[in-house]
Length: 183
Image 1 (cartoon, rainbow, N blue to C red):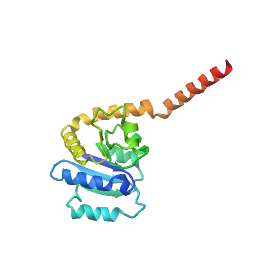
Image 2: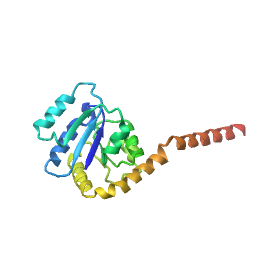
Image 3: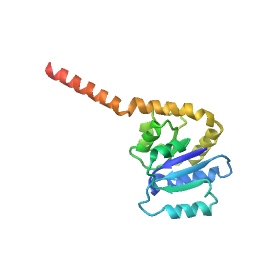
Image 4: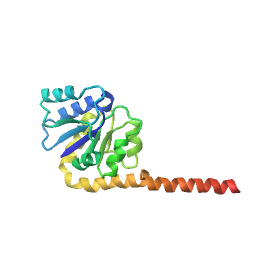
């Protein structure tokens, strides 16, 4: 099962969280985590080296900047959002638009975007490495159901973030304002 992370290689994006998570999952078969993102602090080579030193280089792969995010989302089964600070996660919305389930830390962005979907499963505490590892193990065993689960995420995207819906809401708002202004 392919899990993805889409974030710049920066500490607050959850680098240590991902290493701890991978160590928790090390003896669990059937998973890989692929991380795509920019490298503003030149950390990628160090992350690759650490991955190799820990024996995770076949499980935890740091790709660098991704030109085609659509193909990235098409290549993963689930997005992991390990950020330790995130005011609003655009990658969460991108993944949702592709029907990708998301496991996220409880940052402001994660809670805002996933609030209506979360049933206690998709969000973990900021230090929730072990709970997330257990959730990943469970997801590995229910891979066939992920497409159906992903549809739930895609429906949330369509309801809350699809531009045409936003335009309809804005039109309604301004029509209401104009109506009340004319009175």
